Length: 453
Image 1 (cartoon, one colour):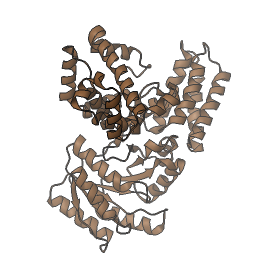
Image 2 (tube, one colour; image 1 turned 120 degrees about the vertical axis):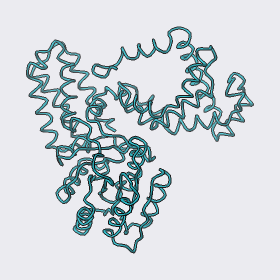
Image 3 (cartoon, one colour; image 1 turned 135 degrees about the vertical axis):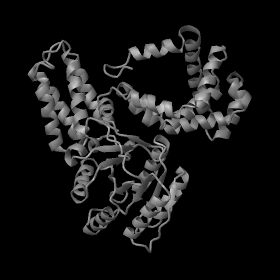
C-alpha cells in the first residue's frame, strides 16, 4: 500500500531537504506537489485541503524556516500531520468489557467480512489468548455459513451453527446465549452484506445491534475503493454507532486514499488492516508507523514485532551455533529463511516496512516477489539432502533433474544457486570478520532519523 504516494512524496521531500535554506515560495511549491500526490492517491479533497493547510501553517513558522536543518524539519512536520490525520494512536479492541464481548461486523458484499471475522478471531486467540466463537447471520449469500465454518475450523475457534431458514436476529440471540453458557470471551457476529447501501440492509443491522448490544461495531471496507470507502463508512456510521473501521485488501491498494480519508470523514478510527488472503494477514493500525511508511522511512518496529512472533527460535539458535563453530551456510538454511519470510507476511508485506525501499529500482523490486520465493523453495525441495548440504556437487545432470522435479528451468536453478552463493559470502563475513552484533549496530546507524532503535 502507498507505493505511488510514497514515490511522489519521497521525491518532493528529497528535493526540498537538499536545500540549505527554505522560503515561503519553495515551501509553497513543495506543498503543491504534496497536494497533487494526495489527490492522485484518491484522498478526499476536503481531507487534502485541511492537511496541506496544517502543514503550511507549521512550515512557514520558526519550526521549519527557523530550523538549522529546515529540510528535515519539514519532513518531520509532514510525518506528524499524517499521523494526526490518521488518528495519532492505535485504537485496539475494547477487551475490558464483561464476557462475552460481542463484536458485530458490518459492511458491503465483497468487502471481505467473513474472512476478516476469521482473521480477527485468530488474532484474539494468538495475541490476547482470548477464547472466541464465530457465528454467521448471513442467510442470503450462498454458502456464507459453510465458508465461515470452514475458516473457524482452520483457525481453531468455536463455530455456532446457523441455517438459512432462520432469522438473523434469532441466530444472534441464540449465539449470545450459547457464548454466555460456554464462558466464551469474545463472540464475533458476521452479518449479511449487500451490493450497495439499502434500507432493508440498514434495518436488519440496526435490529441486530439493538438485540446484541455489541461492545464493538466494526465496519469492514475494501481499501481499493479509495475515498468511496470513507464515504460508505460515513453512511454506515450515520445509521449505526460504529466503534471502528477495518480496511481490507490493502496489499492490493497501491494508492492508500482510504487509509488517509476514513478518520477525518467518519471520525472513527481504523483499527486493523487486512494485508493478504491468509488468516494470519491482519495487523493493528498504527498511524505513526503508517505515516513513516508513507514518507519512505519504513516501519522497523512492526518488522521487529513480526519477527519476534514468527521466528523459529530453536532454529535461529541452531543457525547461530553453526556460524560460531565455523560451519557454513547451506541450502537447508537458505530454505528456512525463505519459509520464515513467508511466515512474516510475504515479500510485499516485508518490503512495505523496509526503510528507503522506495529508492530501490522497480526492476529490482519486481524480481523479488512471493511467486519467486515459492519457486526457489520448490527448487531446493527437489534436491537431495547431500545437494542441500554441499551445493558444490550440483552440476549439469543434477541441475536437469532438479529443474524437472521442481517444474522449473535450468536457468532458474542457476539463478537460485547464484543468489545462494551471494548470501553464503555475506554470512562468512558476518561470522569471521565483524560478528552479528557489529553488523546490527552498523545497520542501526544507517536508519533514517526518528526510526532508530
